[in-house]
Image (cartoon, rainbow, N blue to C red; front, top):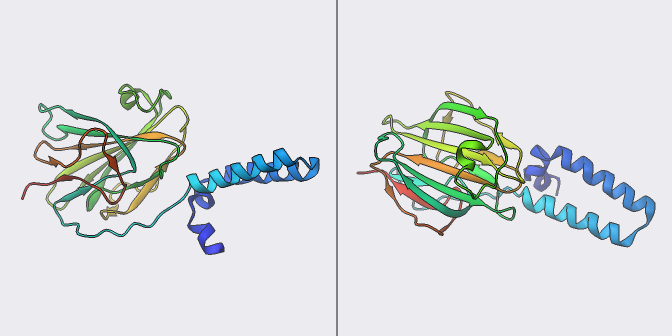
Length: 215
């Protein structure tokens, strides 16, 4: 039981929420309110549900595959062919009910981690990519190919968590961070990558193949 609780991100990243829940429980006990007690139970359930931390076993993945960095729905696929390094962008919207852990899409080394403060526009709008609070990581693989992953906070989500650092070696499918309570994740790819998803597709972080390197 204790092991399962510690594996839940509420233990690692939700300490403030845990304290608030404890206060709510104490208040419910003191005032002996059935309605308030039920409300507290709902808050507890949602907190553990939101911070769930699933283990996902990769199968039939080869070195050419690029996997989704998050759960959610593909809401945009954009192209900028003048930018050979990041000519394609896939945008994924996460609802509050999606798993909010983020995954590393390729094997490689973290070349850059860059955080920028910003506004908190709705995460499903295109402008959120440039205006909202965000965190970028650039991963360079053994062939010097680069992928950029951007975590974007939304109106509800106002806390980005990133667990990797510059020069760190990372593996495809590794968990590297999360965004709390509804958000957007974007992955920028070179123009020679074959996109394997389309608009409105549901993707599973750490599992769905969203792109493929050329042979």
